[in-house]
Length: 140
Length: 140
Length: 140
Length: 140
Image (cartoon, rainbow over all chains, first blue to last red; front, side):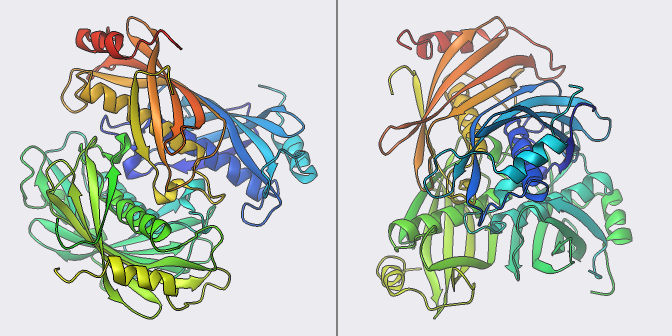
């Protein structure tokens, strides 16, 4: 589980399992979305309800390697990939907490926009500083 | 938070919040469902994938007292209310973990049925014993 | 399916089914919440993003009679039960669209509050008029 | 909306909207998963509960172009991209039903496996025939 700067615990829920008895593929995106937003809110100064700048998802992807199953807890590792002027590509690894097995890897591109007109704006300084301090990982 | 025999942590997810910025009312039912099934699987011997007996929901209800908001973690307290021959009424209290404020109380009736014909069957002995040992609370 | 003033189609989704192959109990609350809010937005003048008055859920309940399963479409029938000064109790019947079998009945209490201070306010006049015109059903 | 062989209606739900008032990015994956599985079950002979072969997701991706918002109905267009021996890459376009605006495009790779040992198996003949008949689109 090296190679990530932040780890977010993501316990599964009863109905995350689909009829095949495994965590549905869609849930991994909820895990990435939750981990990245939790980091931005608690570490990066994002205020989803009142801030002038919000992050919107422009693209995402996931590759699946193994299955999780309720009541597993997942651990979402997050690091910054490309950090541009108005966007960040987050890179994630999703592990089963009980044995650290890697279940999936994913990417998630956030574009930062003005809350009102939804046009791209530079990444806020405080957020950029937090990203560089906590999520830019050398050993990937 | 006295009065419950089991507490299940339930971290919220980014999209549990609705457009009003609070955890949507539906999520509290997912919290109850998750807590009760986690307890039955880890403490009560329920095997959702292979067991002969499964629990199906016959009725549920919830009263809301205060709001939670992502990234709050909720804590779901569970106790057994009425324990019949083929059914159990679970009683739950859902708290905000950071300050133990009670956000909602709910009930959830499970009827135990045969996996194949879905007709009611007696509560399995091991489950009944676990309920009486862990979830029948005097001081309610 | 008589006895309701509004019917909202609610197609199920792949992962609405739980591991037992039936629509999870929690989904019925999402169906009620969706039907009632769709009615309020399209027929009753509710503007969740900008309006001064919003509806918050104070209590809800559901009784389950039969199972649905993806890819069923559900039909949510809605009528007004008690209509108070600041709150409405919605009464719903959830049917399988293919054969009109009643799967569940539920209630859902909305209290109308000021968006900013979240204190109860009278039901807006336009909404009350729409409720009385469309959702107060004599033949219940 | 040309270029797809199957269109699946996907009405949004109240809480699909996130706090920013738009359909959350994760929901688009639920839309793809739902559309593809509905097609396989109703047109391609897939039996998720009893069939010997099931489809598991190996990879997925989505690019977002515009926003949807409850109570919009989305329309998911589906076609087959690469059709291999044991896997299919589905290509999807997700439109707003009211004006046919393209909101997102996505891909979704299903690997077909034996239900019990979860090892890859050839695409069932009936499913392959249905794919070639209905979802292989020349004009892409």
